[in-house]
Image (cartoon, rainbow, N blue to C red; front, top):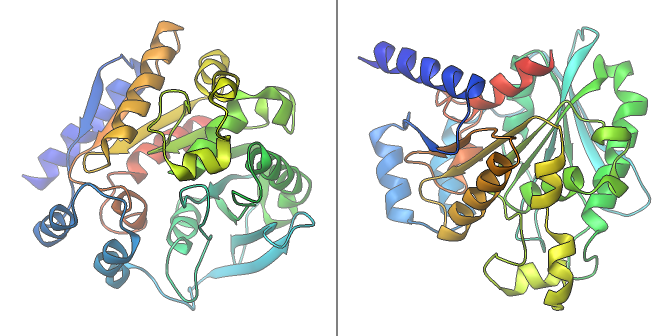
Length: 317
């Protein structure tokens, strides 16, 4: 039965990738019963500590066999302008590059905290798929409001384009991936050409997991205002939606079933705008998953998220 379900999912995703529509695709859960129950108990909230407790036992721990990690590589002048670069110990050449932008409600967040396996897990998955992995941090609100994070993404991508070939990466095949506030920042980068490191964005694709894309329609709260400002008259110009609809960058847009409702609404709004512009990319609802489990599950036996990412990456090969 599991094999049949896997075959059905693969066919469904492939079909939607080639003929995306405005309809939301519900991606069947691959969660174990214990994990599914644990996530339901945590509820539809953003809850890193209890979710990490569920997933940490499933994650790889250092030292990582066959992996070379260069930590704290500086890409700018600020203390948070740092990258971790993951490559095989015997790197190949010309590999796609996955750059990950973490979340944290615009005001916090790290690419890694202490000896946590997150978000090394995303980098390890990238290597398992024949990619080079780059994990970045950026400046935070309220000290650094809009558009600081987009400027930082621009600087990080400039570093990648200039340096990643020495680590086996192909600077012409960069996939930029963001989660939560990171997805908002990635969307802003793609949508506003003034931040682009190269004409057309310099990207082969972008992954937007559970993001907020339009501050004018998002739920008003202190973190949102800390980054986008309290002057709502500025919000329409700072929305990512029109620019994403006009962009030609291939996108993966997904959110979790157990996400807070605003993430559902924002993803739906973006999908509607893209389809109205003749740019339907497909919108995926990750059944059973929560805001944090969707990223903590990466590089485990649960391929709910990574099957979708792999499709986008394969288009860039």
